[in-house]
Length: 618
Image (cartoon, rainbow, N blue to C red; front, side, top):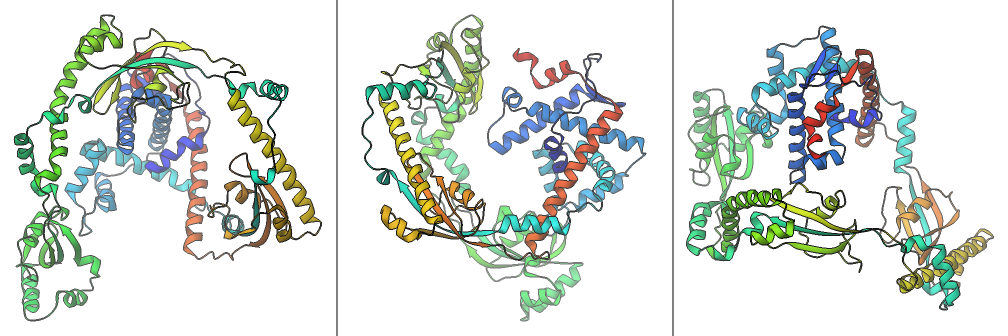
């Protein structure tokens, strides 16, 4: 359901909110019918989504970045859609008992352990990962279930027709084969240098292409554990202490092939063990109990990979080939057998010393980061520039004399000394000279920056870019000649010429590409050729530019194949599911938009700004 709700963001397209007014209390973000979305509720939802996105990207997303991406409006839109469905569910008197909510959670495969049953520890770990307490998750799932009841009827019987499926399948799976030749600068012939008058005229016609972009002079200073930590100053004594603590985890831990079988009682388990010790194999006993290998064979695993600690302890205490006494596991009485044992492999201290020292240095630097952050803020609050503050605190500031929006200097090279992943350039282009900017969160620390100057975009003179202009002129000359030659070749071929003969006349190789679909990337075939080939009839000729301005391709479509449509195939079933989901999302989006209008939806923009941090950046 969360996926369906997320799809609403795309499905709505236009807000469709009935009216926006200012008559709210500060604690209400929006109101749908009689349902109010509180400031705290929306702030919590927005923060949760922000953290989830941060975990997916592997680094935190700031509120400024979230607003720049429109993420704040998406979350608001989704929250309002949820509230509209909740309001309608209440009007219809829909409800769900605690027992039914728990049943649905217990049945969720996300929370099932190795034995296939609900795993409380896994449940707690997963909901904590997404910022839920148990009570909050139960309440949330009850609301989701009621929404599902409400919207489930909308998609009932909604599915694509056979004609739609067949047409889309043929479109997706149609295959084409071609013959083609590449015309390159070698076929363009000699290109004489342009006269001064011709070059000047070309420059005047294309002056915008050579325009100098806006440049900004910026300075910044980074205070991060990585910058402050000096691993070379960490002693071997300290590093060896950490090594001893982590020795078991630094290398490859012991792995064992573990088999387990669960029984309803100790007596049955003991009887089964007796049969095994008398010669019945563990595998044969499993077959008698109709167990598939996946039901009893955990594979070659580490001890930590076995969620049931009782089973793990028993498995890693047995010699290879032995069967345990009955063990009281989480899911019942179990017998455990150990097969292959792969011993642990330890890394020696020398191989990990540098990494350990870096980690220790970074950890020690974290407290320095907090201290320096406060000092930096004090300096900035006192009117010091980033460079001045850095000098007073003994830090190294970086100054870039000129950089454009893409991070390039006037020489066309990337600006040096900007750490990978630091978006200080884009931030600087959203600021101005003299603005006291908020620091950027970066790698567990902070980066302060100033915009020191702005060089507006301007037209360059021909003398400044003469070499670039002449190179571009030459490329255009080559492209024009190749286009003309390709056109002539296509005309001859359409009049009955032989492709092989024309290729030989131009001194180029006749190549082939067979059986590719429209979404394919055949080796050596530019994407423009694939696209053009699917616009050309069988036995037809065509031409298209290559991936750069000095290549042209002439081709012939030699074969068009539409594979037969098998509606019972797995591929068609997946296609049908995708189309059905798309139809459902579209219909659901329209339904919720109408609900919002009929119920009456209002937004307190001031509260939204407060919850998303927009008012603090003005």
